[in-house]
Amino acid sequence: MTDLLQLPSKPCALRVMPQPSDANIHGDVFGGWIMAQVDIAGSIPASRRANGRVATIAVNSFLFKQPVFVGDLLSFYADIVKTGNTSVTVSVEVYAQRMRLSQEVVKVTEAILTYVATDSDRRPRALPVLD
Ligand SMILES: CC(C)(COP(=O)(O)OP(=O)(O)OC[C@H]1O[C@@H](n2cnc3c(N)ncnc32)[C@H](O)[C@@H]1OP(=O)(O)O)[C@@H](O)C(=O)NCCC(=O)NCCS
Image (cartoon, rainbow, N blue to C red; front, side, top):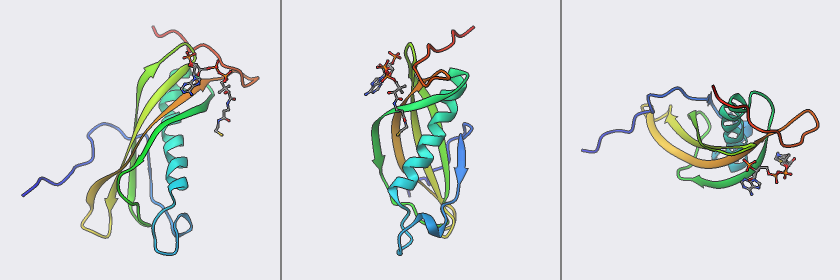
């Protein structure tokens, strides 16, 4: 028997449950809605590292591995994988707890996004130096 997947033990950036308005008539959640949540989740460590505002410059990769259904409890895990002079690249992994199926855990999405620290004129700004 294969072991059931567990949620990662690290803190998640975001947890949200899609509603009927986020899905088609069959209850399958729109990819664009998931992309928006991934963008929000990824921006959290990026703006923390930038100590201020960031803009998404690139979605480097995006994989919808499994469908998402209305009523799934989604957990978004976001980790910085690279920093440059002004940019922060973040890996986001999304897990669904299928609330209708004994809380089975499924990895539904993985993505890599790059954010740029911006100033009040929306121009690129160097990341603050870490202590
Ligand atoms: C974000 C923005 C201010 C950056 O300005 P820019 O002049 O294009 O940026 P630069 O060419 O100086 O590059 C800034 C950083 O982004 C990185 N970058 C540029 N293109 C990239 C790409 N395709 N993929 C990943 N990183 C990229 C650069 O390497 C640089 O990183 P570094 O400083 O760490 O080396 C500008 O592109 C912008 O406003 N874009 C729209 C943002 C937006 O509205 N996002 C919401 C989605 S619609």
